[in-house]
Length: 291
Image (cartoon, rainbow, N blue to C red):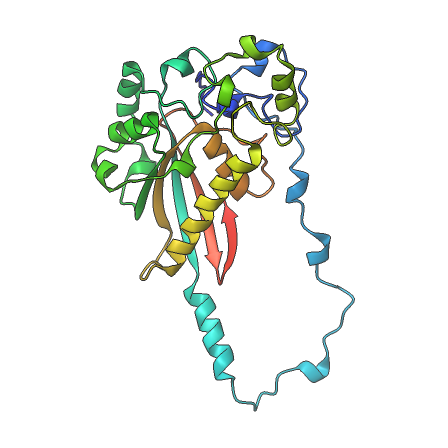
């Protein structure tokens, strides 16, 4: 993975301490290190373990009386139900782009809901990424956070898609409330901040967004996207490509949400302007995923 020196654009995202339930003894400078890479020895998220109740019963024997009668006529209702399930199969390919740097990123300040523009030098760096292979070809839909730094990133990196984009507030970075614009050094002695770092699922920044609110809106966006694609006619040949320009925290949550065995702690956001791809599958009303 390429090194990245972004600031804290909930790049808490790249804040190794900012992980649910993660008590961290890293030094302050390490806690702020945006080049955080997951520990290869890190255990998988225990919530991703298979449910033992779902394992088949190896001791059960098939009931011979339940064997289908080869001479029986097929049930038209069953055939229609099967056809319906087949028709609902859909696969999405989400191309995720993280926005470029702002002044607060450069100063390593918490940046969530505050609406800042890109730095001029960031626009130059983003323009060099227009021809990365993930952006080649067409997209069925284009979505973008409605915050300025994401809108400007889309305008630079894929200008031909700017007018067709849907700007969705659910793709915003997590709001850090009263801690917006502050650095780790300014907050490290704050008891509330320490509690939030120890367990962001139980503590919320003053006037900020709770963990449940943040993950809930990301989940809402993904669920709605799957349903829209599943109901759209003529979208069954190959993966449906969708471009999403958003923030580091949202990308990490999407990676954790859609990749088996990967938690938010292990997920890493890509460098600004660099694409990462996630695939979602919908089969007969049941969601699956791969990365």
